[in-house]
Amino acid sequence: MPASSSLVMSDFDVIVVGGGPAGATAAAFCTQRRLRVALFEHTRFPRHKVCGDVVNPNCWPVLEKLGAAERVRALPRHEIEAASFAAPTGGVLTVPITRGATAIRRSLFDQALLEHARSCGVEVFENETVHEVTSERRVITSLGRYQARTAIIGADGRHSVTARSAGLVRKSSGGNGHIAFQAHFRAPAALDGRVQLHLFHGGYCGVVRVDAERANLCIVTDRRGALFHNDCEALFTHTVRQNPHFRNLGIDPEPLEPLQSAHPLRRPMNVPARNGVFLVGDALRVMEPFTGQGILFALRTAEIVAESIGSSLQPERNYIADVTTLYRQRGRTNEWLRRLMYCERAARAIIPLVRRMPGLARWLADNVLGEERRFR
Image (tube, rainbow, N blue to C red; front, top):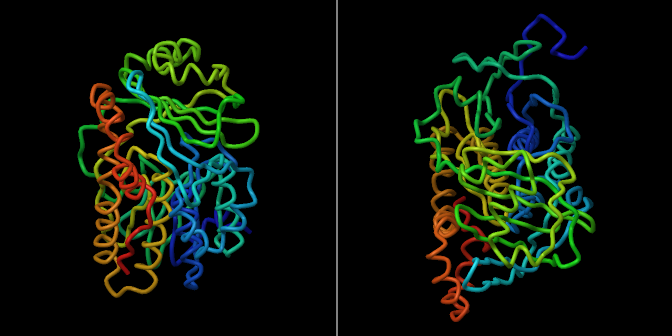
């Protein structure tokens, strides 16, 4: 009988809230440490997710350690050869990518990781919404009550119920006011193996081929551009078609599924852990992702939390120290790029400069895609 159908409270060593990459990875790593794990996901997979669909090269060592790399490699995907930045004027900067970046639809990627967690022994409860996390490490859902003996891991995204219930949310200004709209479109023949960032006044657009038929397109715009979100043709006209490099791609503004939106696009780090509750992925910190860093942060924080819970005498203290180091190492270039995306005048000046300085282009690629300096 499923635990959710019983009036008796069910006990687990670890309870994970959220079944995306951070939650599924954390749950699977915890089972590898012989912990009994339950995972609660409010919807049923596969499900569409607003994302750039790019898997950063640094994700593969985590997936290998998890034992899920071959499952992920078997998915329909498209290898990425370079990253390009295109300003409306000022040309295009292309940075070669030499190792392991690939584009995979998030619906497929997330389902593969959740199925891997299930195969590792995680008890997965889909369509069961978590309403509250109590100070006694209890989880109250739409169907039952559950007790975590060791830890609760909040992997429930930027609007995390876990973070709010456990008092781990830090006050912020709510981000920069920009909104992301994302969907898949028919991939034109002109779309090659690059992940492309096209700047326009008020925002930017990321586009990448994810398989033979589909391209992922994500438009990040200010609220003026967002007024046209109900009409994709109008949204294109008032945002990304300002950029002639994008127009040359010839993407038909008829999405293969309804546009979805995400906001805020950035938020300061919440309190990483307290009283046996740990936050991972976007529940911990929302960073505007470039070249797959959002998925990378999800996987790495999940790996770190399992290490901290499973082997540390001071799990909360060690987890806080390690994730702070992770974001400090990899967040600086992310912030530099974010500011560049919103300053068209700076982009017009910087892109030609970097094109004349190959060493600077290599530095940029290494900081975004280079190997992580491990701290354990």
